[in-house]
Amino acid sequence: MILSIFATLCLKGVLRMQASAEIAYQWHDGDGVHFARWIRALARHYQIFEQLPVERCGGRSISFLEDEMVKKHV
Image 1 (cartoon, helix red, strand yellow):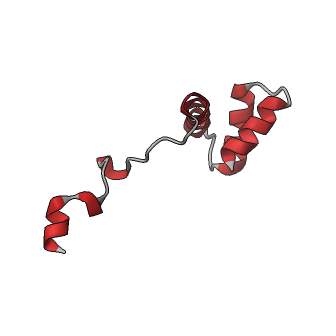
Image 2 (spheres, rainbow, N blue to C red; image 1 turned 60 degrees about the vertical axis):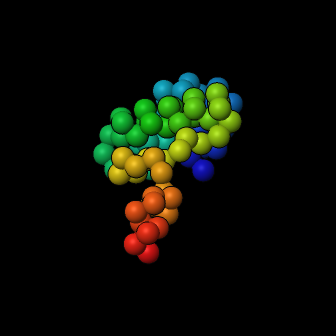
């Protein structure tokens, strides 16, 4: 949804920095500088690869379900 809003603002002629700052202000508590930067990076990734990046929460790049030790214990 955030990327859709970002794309719409950019198509209307709003600069990328201004669009991401406006979205960050509306969606994030505080000044949202890092969130605005993340929006621009996410939009750039989607523009290049036509898909969202893989999430790597907790430093793991694979699912716990694909881990052999977890399968063995389950």
